[in-house]
Amino acid sequence: MRKLLFTFLLLLLSASSLFAQDWRGRRYERYRDNMVDLTPFIGYRYGGTIFADQSNLFSQDVDVKSSANFGLNLGIPINPYGMKIELLVDRQNTNFTHGGGLFTPSGNLGDFHVTYLQGGVLIPFSESRAASPYMSVTAGVANLDPDINGVSASNRFSASAAIGVKVPLSRNMALRLEERGYFTSMQNNDRCRSCYYNYNHDLYQGETNLGLSFKF
Image (cartoon, rainbow, N blue to C red; front, side):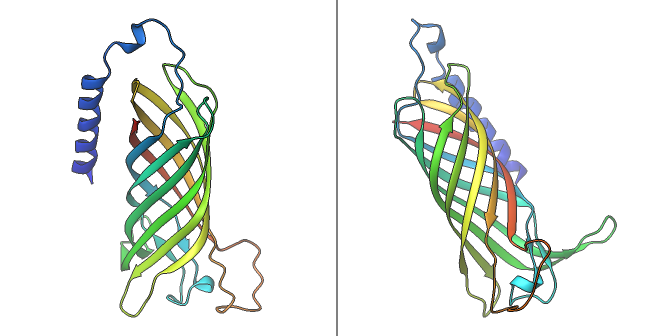
């Protein structure tokens, strides 16, 4: 994971030196993010618990181990001022764990793949040549795929919200840093038809992403 992050950061630095020519110092033109953009990204996803009362797989609550994630984001402009429709695919290859206190090793209960497929809207707060902060709201499905014999994948409704910033490197390239949170519905009436919960047992995850946007 460290080697992957180092390589990605090195590519970002190389790209910025090649493409970030002194365009900010030219005759002033208002920066507008009104083009289609494609953003490959990598990040780190954390959090997530699969509760026993919402799963037919485990008889105890299990955690989703924090690990790297990667994905692709497509932005399609819907006005001249940076608002865009977003199409997002975001994957994490991880595993189930149980235990893992301060001095207790956690047990690996099987590999687990989580892929979010969502669409929504990106809304900028402002636009400038220095930085463009934004918020994003999306919804779609989460593909939950345990890599365990005899167990099939499940698709569940999911939604996310994000806050981030785009830093232009050139007229057709920008660095994108983002914090995103995911909600996935885990209701399983077959597992417990008459249970009452004081708090919900859905799946919540968060992640920090770094990407490079190519505009065209």
